[in-house]
Length: 125
Image (cartoon, rainbow, N blue to C red; front, side, top):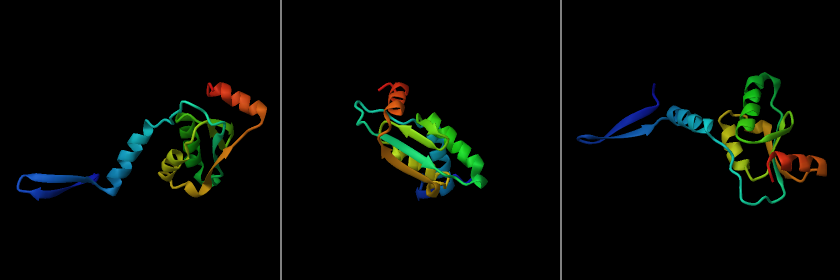
């Protein structure tokens, strides 16, 4: 299926390398098990992922929304997700698989006391 290629390096030896397609398949497989990590201490900031993905990409938008839940984020609005620890790099790496990075922003924020208290309970902080 053209996921890897063989290169003969000696009389009885070969080097096997992943093709671009093979790397994408391997990364997607690895991302299925991906979860965000917690830290021993919380810095008091909420790390946010905000998106405005056009309707023509609704299936991808729904997949991204579902995956953000699966990796441990919590939705405070339909397209606003929060996590108590830094996660921007990991989330954006994952979002790039979908080619949707131009529709997604990340931010750090402090939230009002009601929402802050609710999220602290959810994340057990």
